Image (tube, rainbow, N blue to C red):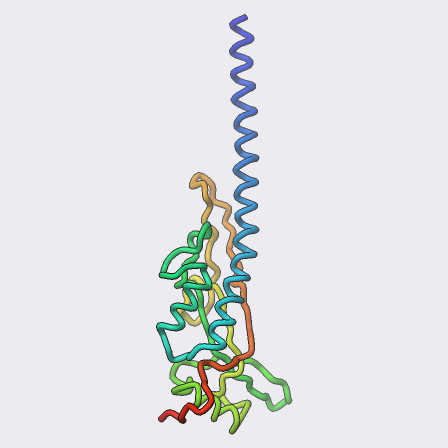
Length: 190
């Protein structure tokens, strides 16, 4: 009788280990799927906002980043640690016509951005393919949002005893620049 109790305990321990491994695995896979889908929505939301707010207004851009991660203040994406509003990178792009006739998207560096939305409108009317005409807004989720490259953020598991080594997607969204904060009648800035 005692030998059977020991056997039952060993069998139970093996089954419990397999059961909890399966349950934790399902939870992690479900969370990875959540992160992939949510990051796509985060970039869409930030891109829609950035296309309509003044690109020179840092506070408005910070608010757009925060709202994109479903927050009203700086912080972590709900159920999406380690993603924060600081991982959201907003780039303004011009369209450049190549000598071959091809049109390419080119990021505009901070030094070449127009001074204000009305200046951008003027630049685009004068030369739609100029280097300081914002035509597109690109939003990505980057590990180093201020760096030259956009590296993927590593997935952080809920259960610290596992490491899946999964890189989250950069989830790029590109939209047409809309108003960029321009209001009809705004004067041309210096």
